[in-house]
Length: 310
Length: 310
Image 1 (cartoon, rainbow over the protein chains, first blue to last red):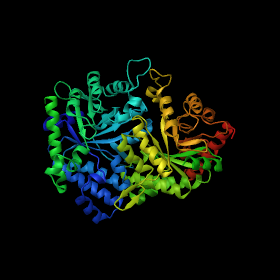
Image 2 (image 1 turned 90 degrees about the vertical axis):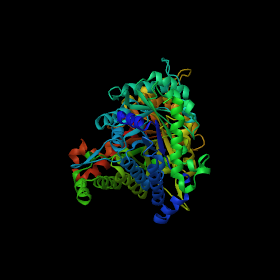
Image 3 (image 1 turned 30 degrees about the vertical axis):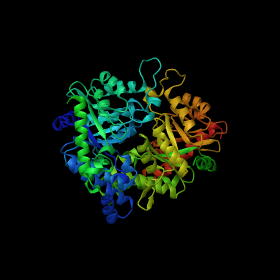
Image 4 (image 1 turned 135 degrees about the vertical axis):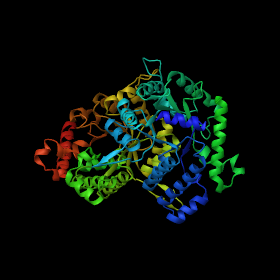
């Protein structure tokens, strides 16, 4: 699967992914009013608003962005109707040719991780039939439980030509509390140790120099990105934290290799909430939230490509 | 919420929780055939089998067990219909007066953990209305992202009288890979460090000596249980790993305090799959899977109470 992502990034010359993390605050009234009129001020109404919002955004960015990353928590918050909107978002993005990274951060003991891997990357058998429960192309995985919690995702990725991104160093302020701690008897921190395992877990899934077992490293920690780019030569990095979380294109340079490959940068609120903030707010009306999102993606691509000399 | 759980354990004299982790292999043909006849060999059919299976089990154990713990991965595996069965299981368990521990192992950056906490422990507003998306009483939380990933769950637990169990030392074979590592400049391992944080995160939520911010520590590691019981005086422990994963009642003693309080032990396959294994297989027919589950719970309670002198 990483080969497909690398190809899509090259074709669109855009190492960026649009995070589809909708909240009701980020959805303009015109969309919400129509959804509430149709379904009421209910979970179904919220889900309807989310899917109409996402479709409008996807329609305006599918030709310039290689991938989208829906954050499942933002859908799970609206219960079953919300999760239906998550599934519809994945399907619609696929219709438009986008690669879908499900930001689910799942992880459990072996037999349970197997169920999650089936749910998000694989399929499930019921009697004589086989179904694809969610069908993302990649999903994010939490490594706290160690190899037997991650391995089922790697196995399904291998079997079904999918990929994962394992949390290594997350973008949030307190990520260092545990992740930055040096482990006794080694020169490595926890995130470096996890990173080394990611390189190992993915060694059989390498295409075009990078593995379908990638890592999440926040661009809010550029010094980590620099170190890990050198340390983990085959690990493709999903980089959150650009824009709303404070990361800049200058911070991002170190996540890429000399050819400007090896990473993809996510922005969520910076894209889907562009219409609420300058410089987009003055140029686009609320109804043009999708045009604002497109412009934000174009600006982000230019900003990053310039910084990495791509 | 921990007060309610402590009371329910005392009233039933049973520090046990039944793990509702259904797979199609654990569901007898009599249930599956009826479900498939009604809904076909589909995700809906699988979900129907799961909910009918769970209801029969709940009907036979609600008077002897204080709580159930559905593992959401086993439902998520069947997509949206599976998640509907998860929700229906929670609702049915509540109707029968059971406390529900959602084994969801969620955890993310702050704003995203907030969405998960709303989904599983809290509520969400849509326009003028408020909804409870899933409505578990407790949920499990992954600590890899540090305080700002856990804090939203603690805040919602406080506001809505709910509780959480943070993964400290998990029951799986490779849990030690990262969790057992000693952190440099400290005498503590990663799991001890996380445990210390759990004690701290929960200090404002103590009732009857224990906090609504508890920990998950696998009974496959009794030496860890012993150490942590002393180290974390207010941390109530959810103990997986009894039965199918290899833990025994003797291993469990150390997780309890001198009064036989401070922990609750989970068994999943050992209860819901009792009908497939001796000594229950010879005494109960396949159709009596629910009676077998009841007997397995009774045996488990006796086994544990004897070991802890309760």
